[in-house]
Length: 578
Image 1 (cartoon, rainbow, N blue to C red):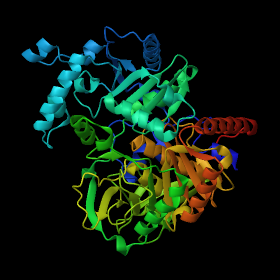
Image 2: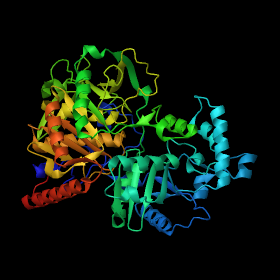
Image 3: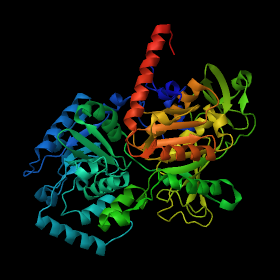
Image 4: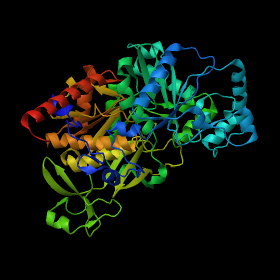
């Protein structure tokens, strides 16, 4: 294994970090060329301390009869650690005001301000009376159910008898619920399979109507969110966890791509080789067991109102699945791929990008100025098209006529094509949660590792990790020491873009495989061709080096930290600055 190069994939290597820059480009420039939504306030995703300054959290008061001292002590520690890291802690009475109106004042109904990013609560047990009233409210909702109702309208009808915190928030799209509860022994047992752990995690997320659930024991704790991770931490890791895992998750909540950002169209699967190649790829990886069948909300959520709320928040998606598979088609260029400095000098600035490193020629094609391994290159920003499994599909049994969507990136604009004849109004036809990450990987590969993508690039994302010992010659991993950001976020996409640049910048050409690590989420593995990728993954699974769940993540982190320290030491010894 090329441990040195692999472990240093996205390390700062002791350099002072630029708050506005990743790879060799400005953050805003990457966002523009990769089709991500514009950000009001940009924070370098490698800087969780900067994220903390922008996060506002409130703690809901404990129930009067709550007596779990282990959870209470952890709650107190968590509050203190958030404060130490610069998070704004807002008292409950200030964060959750009583709205105007006689009924609100009588019932003391509160609404948490939309400026609050997270509410920390504990799992609350229902009395028999509350259970009966809750069942009555659900019956009323089912009889009066209307698909056009908003999240808050649904909760107003169905949740008046409930005590879950979600009913108190003004904006469920902006305010996350973090619920603390006892750690379930089965979840913490090393012998419990990943599938079973996630079934337990999903149950807890759904029954508490939370975005994050933390299980607490005297000496350790767990975290589960919709990334379907099974992470367990020791209490002495709380400082690291709060800064590099919890704060980033609060700052950048999971949000699926909004359909209104896409130019929509259709494609004929029979007119392209890539949909069939993707379906074949799914069948080939079935034996690895890295892509279990997903879960439909209708099977996991018994209350119709809760199911409707989740589907509304997730842009109509009707379930969750374990990862994605995709193939980036060969990049499409019009005219010269690279140009000279003299040609570049006469190009005009792209106003929508607002960075002189991106210009366009008289034909309207975009070009970007990059620097890789000390060499300045003026190269065209190609059109990118990716065939990918739709959100919620069975990745190992894809039907090209219904399960595969094409996502495109043309001059910073998003395109979405569904198979001809498939109605986009079907609630299960949606692009992957990871769309921004997928496109960031594809455009970065085209710019920095063109040999890797020139004939198409298979991409596999699953919720597990490889052992560092699995990597061979010309295979590299990066990202293990990055903050833990949720899937599909702009911040996660930026880190994936940067990781490809860093690996290419350190290792040059001849790369066969990239493994982009996303802590508390999984890995994205990109290979030079389908057969090579499937062969290596199958070998890894057979040898126990590639598995679902977080078992190998700590070793990936240790290997990365070691390589970073060695790089810093070498840099000082040589008196050089990278």
